[in-house]
Image 1 (cartoon, one colour):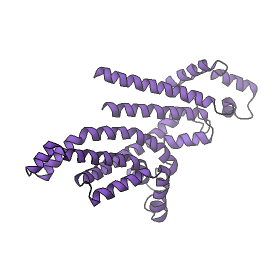
Image 2: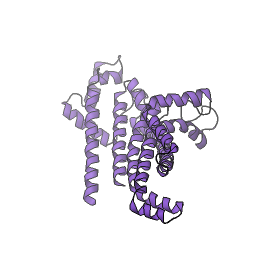
Image 3: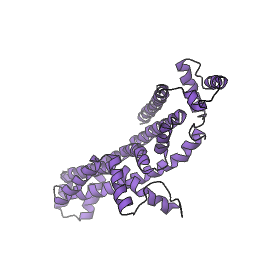
Image 4: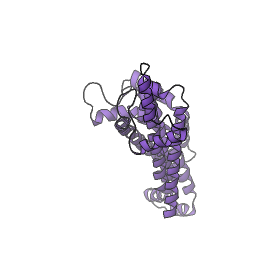
Length: 304
């Protein structure tokens, strides 16, 4: 077991290291000069040369990479061009909001996915099963940005039940309930595909369990429905836990797009704003943090 965990952990380290290489060289392919972007068009040649030396841009490409990697590992991420704040501070500030969205989406996916899957699985090939499965397929088939816009149109613009964007109200209370009120639509949007996946896997596992000899036997003995359900749920738990764990990484990935749609102030929106502003240091930092978190989340879900 220790060897298995060690192999998985080494895989995470390799993925993160690969992410640093991709992020570094991807930014080098962006048109324009990074130093000119940082200092602006009025910068003098002495300032440009000094900053180029600071970032190691007067050295070979691989020397530049290892200098940059050393700065990343020691926490010297530099300042954001667009926000004039330390990049590490901005990421810490926004990361909590992304985790709130991810946690809310996971809770919705688990609750609705399990309920739909259990109801469908216990009534296979009935009208209820067909309707629920068709609905889950439809929800999973809609592109996430379209689903987000549809929810905003009906529940924010037309019905005015939920806010259009943001994490808190501009006026009034910005407490827990206000955040939860803003969280509903982004979390539902992010959870749509994982909910459908969990529902379909749960339903499939229950249908399989209903055909197992020991379940057929206890049903023939006239055991109470609750006790039969307990046996079934015990049997499907490993598969459902495994597929639910895999969805955590996908939820984290989809959350980045949801943040842009709903202006949710997390890592995804920060990354989008950095790209628009051509804030290359911030783009590097945000992408690297996302890649690291994605790798760690997948490691945890694979090993738990």
